[in-house]
Length: 94
Image (tube, rainbow, N blue to C red; front, side):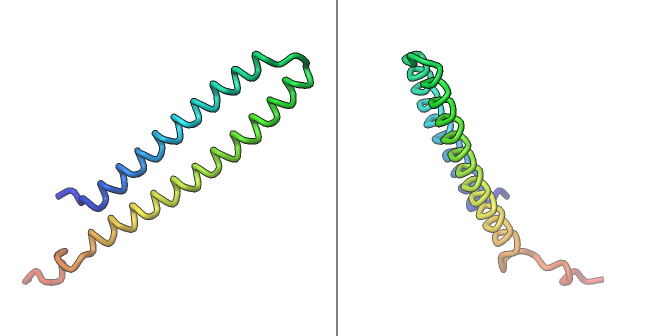
């Protein structure tokens, strides 16, 4: 039987990653527009530096969020697996 608690956690992770990638795509497209408007090498270097810094921060935060969600999902699954209705294998007569 599939645990609905665990399934909800996986759906939450899928939702979170989809939202993150949609947001990142918007930011990447905006950065491309800004690069096309650069008038000097200094503008390009500044924009590239900002883009890399912001991207790294956002990917790091998202990785931490996904790790938290994964940990919560695994904990829910483990609590479901060890619920009182789970069978104890020491109750089998020999």
